[in-house]
Image (tube, one colour):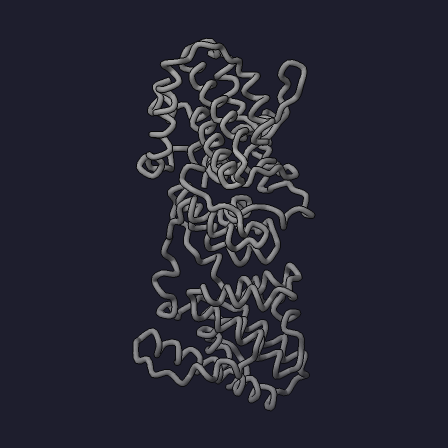
Length: 448
């Protein structure tokens, strides 16, 4: 992906994920919080420090135009919302550099990729988020062993590649785990290929045992020899010199993933798997020939709309359970992804209130008063773009009508005693402010 397109995509993910820049703005000698769509500043950095959906400020995240990095305080990484994790996943998809290291990111990356596809209209697949072996390696690299069982239970459930699960099970649980899979009454081609693959894998241990029994060099030298064979290309493996068992090992290594072969070697020669695997990991020439073990869905790109994504994340995040469900009205601020039919009831309500006020609007209101009242009553920051727009046109009738509408909503909320009614009134005001800030939608509905 071209750099300019990448930077634009990151900005779009942040915006549609409700990640904004919050700043203090001085009005009549007093500072008020304002939010705006984050943009890259002259120094090439974009700052995010406010979660619009959850109405919370967090320690700022800095995204640089010049580096493939996101700067953050790692102590706060567990407090981030789903949109921030999705942004990290996008960096990983493009640069193949995982930037955040915790179990939440590994478990929920599937939803994040599907939502990224929706936001950017892309076709990223689930391969990176469901590769059981790759995730198992990350657990080791990130020292998340205490979370291994929970992570792998989730990841193997979603994993589409049987061979990937096979590698994970063989290395982490041992060859005995695979034996039960040989009892299979499914006669489909895919199922029988799975049986053949497992049968071949299980035969490796016997072959390594024969090599050890017939060796004429030390155990350490034999292990090194076998690891070198794994790093040869196909032609090199077919022309290996040595015992018949070593030649057979070289041939079978064309078919079987090196992870399994290294594990079999280490079990037989009683040596550390990870030390040996580090020698082979980046130098092996293996290419997966068991394509029938990969279901077609493994490389299919799916899309997950923003509201579904946010509500799934809300349920999965224990801290956010019990909070109100997100609705399409929450997306009015970035309307281009919302169908009008889904928010027609709200838009009709505001349209009716606007017209009613317009006919009886006599007193003059200043936008500075509206800002003070909004912050005082519903405790959320105003959109800076809306404030500046209203400030420049505050004497015009349409803008006066809009400000009277907001003041009426605030006054009504002040009179409410029921907590549920107050919450409903608050979000009506919040969504009205979002409508007024979204100029294309505002013109479409209210005409100004």
